[in-house]
Length: 92
Image (cartoon, rainbow, N blue to C red; front, side, top):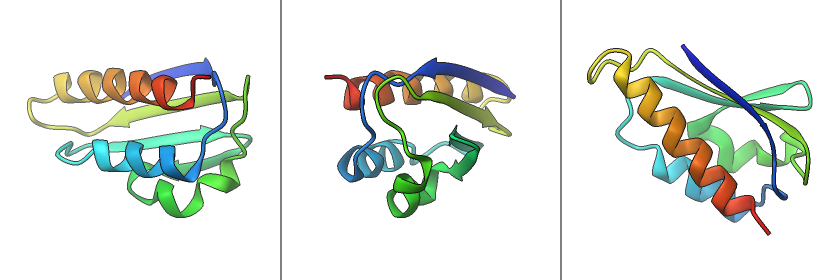
């Protein structure tokens, strides 16, 4: 399992949530986004992004686990890509 915690540069919007979920197609592992005591699996983020309440400075935790193409390496790649995309989409 790979985990990264960071402060959100900006607000997570519906459009950003859709782009994040769409960008994760092809990964075989489980990717989650957590904030404000709520955890969401990435594929359903477009439907429940508001419950996370992510705004500027909110602590966000992203995890990637269980990928197998190849084992271990996929999770690291998925985490790096998702966190970079999250920062880009929520940056001001």
